[in-house]
Image 1 (cartoon, rainbow over the protein chains, first blue to last red):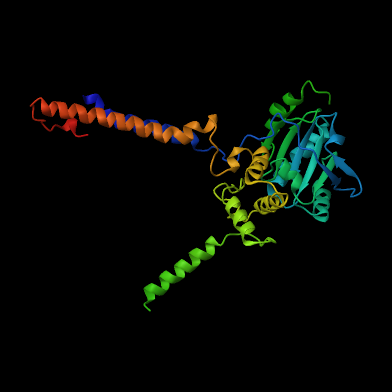
Image 2 (image 1 turned 90 degrees about the vertical axis):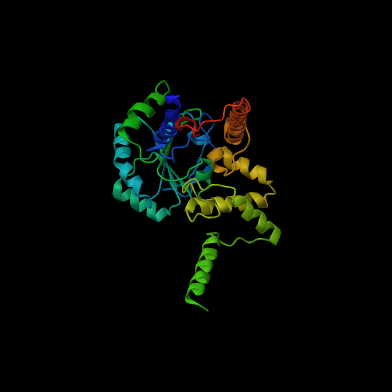
Length: 175
Length: 147
């Protein structure tokens, strides 16, 4: 009978554990709905060359890291030195998706901090970002040579992400 | 009018103003379209500011999604088609009211299972007490039986 007195404590502990496990989790980290699926088709102008068109088809044949950025985005500046380093090492192809920005601001921003991207898609009205399910910048998508979304990162990339997630995903793919 | 009443009216007025939400005016053709648009937006989550609906949020992405929803409405898409469009891109979390599927059964029916379980437990307890009482033994209140 004495044991019954501990039932409320047990229930309390169980509820406490469930709630405790949620503390510190990032609610923005939702699994991408696109994971494993073909990246959405798009056609847009290049940032630096308004007459050149970049399409999802033109990017096929080589895996790449699609990085959503904007000159207004503070976290993108935090991430930027790492992208410059990745570009310098030349191991991963970086494609930029310039989001909710103006050509002038983006160009000035890249001139100031450096341009690590092999190509930059200029998403004038934000509709490409909607197709990719982007909710904020920076976000990055690992896309295979066949155009499948292999992984999505929310927030600034880290050295650890590049070494332990992006590279293993791209291993075995022709670079 | 007392000062208190005036304060109360002011508070109500401010509350209503806050409820008027962040929506930019859309070129609605009629009232029905506007009502449908508003209703739909209140069922969709802004994934940047997750405890706000698309109707409430002032974020850029929410504004763009409102425009996208409006465009889809103009394309004669049904409410379900519009929701599917957003789920395909943002995942099921975009809906404030999750759909009934195998992954949400616990969410939908869990409370009823708990209610049923608790009811059965309560019924068994009451029956036991009634039997004890009927057996003639006057229930002696004790510390252990207090719940």
